Each structure stands twice: as structure tokens, then as C-alpha cells.
Length: 635
Image (cartoon, rainbow, N blue to C red):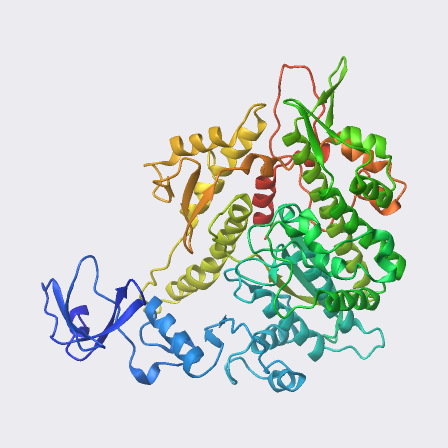
């Protein structure tokens, strides 16, 4: 059938609309070969002439198909058809789930729904995917059934933009596995596995402008099963913790939940020695101007966090050590660095918050005050003590706070993994990946760049498995098939990670003694403007660049890219923390400290004829951008 024969009178099409994205219209006159105009009538009764440029507008599905619970059942599968079908199911039928073959599409209702109880879990248990209404439990059951039937490991990938409900979906999948595979032992394995979620959310989730409980790290949970396919434990791997949130939050955003839980508990007797204040009085918890979240009781959440600590076997002493580190970070943020001259700064030993910081971590206050504002540069022949400007000292203080929190986070993940490591041999596992969603805000920086790069890699895997491999199977079996025109995002990945791409140019600039954000941005302009269609320079800014990602165009401000990519903590401060008499703090900075995050060797080695200078931070020779690339490759 010729394409024009489908565009006959009374058939309906979708046309682009600035306000509604897509608008429905009915064809009022048969289209003939050679016509350049399609005669249409909009739903409000007005007639228009639609100019046919590159292609005809997409056809609308018959009403009888609208609202299907599987998108693959639609006659026409394209963007407006998908959006309309999801809208009808969500707005008219109050259904948040829809299948697209083996994929489950979920719309976040932003409210609690009573469709996740144990009775619902048991209703889906043993059922084939498609026999019942679409549900996250159906996907979890399919993974569990395939594991048991074929004795093969399975994985569930939860992806979507920020605020789409990924963390909650991953949590429900975990609860399904814990319930249907409940062990007959008295070890409460399934309870422990589920108890890991509140802790990781407390230390790894925060309020953003898009989401009150946004995961600010990627998490892969490997749920282990024995030969009877009963759950016997789990193991967590984490990726790309957003450390910058510890020291900076944008307007109407919060730091990690655990800090507010701690401040809300300041008046409790067990926390008196931490000398805590209200969250609005700490710099690190008040920068975003948002202290409370509607409907959230931070004090109650703290009680729940402590209960889950206990359920995992973490005693009171362990908990108080963790809270001491967290309180120390808050007090460090309030330490005031004063400008002495253009190239010199100082910290007052009588600063109350500096005293509390040193007391909590059992550090020598004289040395801390000195090395917060001075650097030690060691050459082959000499050691030089160089004063720092106020800006450099403030940056060093914030870098130290981020480093301490990062170590604490990894330490907690390590301890959780030990608590979930139950005696017994793993036969199979089901992995659940909950990774950052694609992000675009009013102001986007290095963090959004790394998040969106990771999502590009994830989208590439999605394309590979859903489109490319499936179509190859059709060709192999000589099944008649019209190719699906899908967006291949390899070009934007090349823009970021290929030789002389954005990441390599960033790492190159970071190696220069006087490298700046401005010089790096100029290199991007020189290399990509008018040469790569996925890269643009904003009309009204000389400090930003635009990348056309698979999901949207995103404008990134270059400010801070180099500092954040270097992620430098001065070695003298690391050495100082190693001398702490507080065992937990000292253990963070010992050589070969174990971490839940995979470690990598340096990606770039530079030879120089200059005198050898010790690295400012031996532990962080690999840039954050390079680590993002390595972690994306591991996934």
C-alpha cells in the first residue's frame, strides 16, 4: 500500500503544537501523490492547511486501541501515540503502569497508592508477565521466574529522568524478591536486605528542585539466592556520589537527609556532646534556603534510621561514631577563614566550630588551624610552606569536608555489605540498578554533566538491546520487517569521550599549572563550534556551552569544572587526619582504605623535566571525569 493511501478523508493525524506538544487533527480531503498540502480540521472545528515539508505527520491510532496496556499493540508506534496512550491511561483510567514489550513504563503519581501490599505481591507471584495488569511486581516476578527456570542471573535496570520515581520502583522490586523468596531460617535475611534502603537513602538522597527524595548516587544491588531460590543476602555497589552537595546546594534544595535528621535530634540526650544546632544555623545545611520538606518529619526519620542501623546489627557505639563524623563536617563548614592579605589567610584557634571539629575528630587544633590556610610543597631539594588566599583556603576546607563524607559513605556501604553477607553459597542473583536520572536545571554544572553522560551510556545499552539486537534477529530469520527509526546516541557519546573530546580536553587543562575554566571552554569552542552539530555556543553567554543529549538540550556553565574535576584535597590535611586519635576518622585515610566504589589506576601519565613535586593529593590523581568514564564502561 502506498503511504499516500493511508492519508484519506476521516483518518486522523498528529501535528506538532507549541503548547500541547502534539495536537490531533482529522483529514478533510484525500492526499494525492505530489500534494504539498494536507487539508485538516482541528478538534475545535477550525480548518487548516498543513504544509508537507520533509515528511507526513504521524497517523493517529483508532480509538479502539487507545488505552492499550501494551504499547506494542498499537497500530502506529511513535512519539505522539506513546504520549497519548500514556495520558489516557493515567488521566482517565488512573493507571500508572504500561508495558512496551518487556519494558515497563511508569508515571510518577507523586502520592501513595494502595497497590503494593503483600496481597498484591502474592497475586502476581507465579503469574506470567502480561496475564495481569502492568505492574513493577510483574517485572520482578518475570526476573525471579526466569532465574529459577533457567538457573541464570537476571538484572533489572530502572532508568528515567530525575523525579520519575526510580528509587521507589527499585525499592518495590527489592521488597518483592524479599517476600516471594522468604527464607525459612530465623536469620531475618529479607528484613536486613530491605533495611539497607533507609540507610542508603538517608546518606545518599536529598531534596532537589525536581524531587524531594532524589538519589544523588548510583546503586547496583545484587540480591543473592541459594539453590532453592531463597534469598540469602545482598551486595551493594555504588557509583558517582554527588560529593559537591555536602558543601553547596542550589536554591530550594537540601543537603543529604541525614544532616537534617541529625539537627532535628540535637536536643536528644545522646547527641548533646555533638554540640549541634538547628539546620538553618549550619552553612552546609542552609545554603539552599530549604530546611524542611512538606510532609517529612526529620526527627521521626532519624528514629527510623537508628532502628535500621540496629536491625543490621550496628550497635549504639558504631552509630555514635558515624554521627560524630557527620557533626564534625557540619562544624567544619562553619569554620571562618579570614583574609589577611591578597595572598594570605588565617583560621582563628578560638573559633568555636574549629574547636568542636577538632574535639570530635580528636585532632591537634594548632596544626588544623595552620594547614587549613597553608600548603606544603615538597621538591627534591626542599620543603616550602606557602600561604593560601582566602579563596584557596575556603576551597581546601570544602574539599576536606567532601572527602570525609565520601569516605564515611563508602565505609557505611562496606559495613552494610558485611551485614548482608549471610553464610551460604550463592547460586544465582538478581541485580537491580538504580542510577541517576537525566537532569536539566536552570543552572547546570559539572555534576549534571557527569550524570547526563552516565545516562547517555545507559541509553546506549537500552538502544542496543531493545532495537539493534532485536532487529538483527528478524534479519537472521528472514522475517519481513520495517526498520524502526530510533535515535542512535553514539555521536554525542563520541563528543564527550572520544579522543580530543570534552573529557580529554578537560583532563588536559587540569594538568596545566595555570589551567582555567575559561581556557578550557575556549578550546571547546575552537574544536566543536560549526564542526559538531551536537555542540553549540549560547547566544547570550561566553561562559557556557550546550550539548544536544538524547533527552534534551542542556546548557552547562563552565564555572568550577576544573576544580570539581581535579577533586583535590591537599596531602598535608590528609596526613593530619591520619594522626587522629579517633579510630574511625584515622581509618578513612590509611593507605589502601577499602571502598565500595571500584578504584582505578591513573588514566594519564605525564613525564616532565622539571623538579619532581609531590602530588597535592596522592589518592586523587584520577580526575572525576575519567572516573565517570571508567564507571560507565564497567556498567
